Image (cartoon, rainbow, N blue to C red; front, side):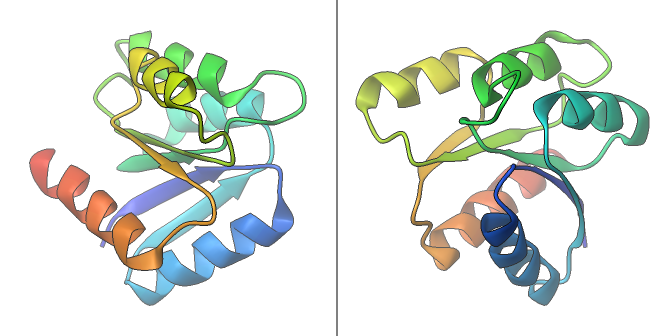
Length: 123
């Protein structure tokens, strides 16, 4: 069981991801802004972060870059999940330090496999 943070401003997506992850045995914390996500990740040190890209204020690319370049949080894998499906978006997300980039709508099995791979490689 892992502690997973969801940073996403969509209540619908948060509910879908939370249900999926809790059903798989994970603990989930959700926040609705990148700024709050960064602060909570630094303080609580989750096992993995799911990051939306399009949010008011700071976007997910900026938040991912902040987390992955901070020595206190750089070991925490970030999975970007977004409606942005252009190859340039995926490349940019990975350049910001994301460990995976998944487009919405999300295939549940693909997401769980990705999370399990990232969590097992961190041990």
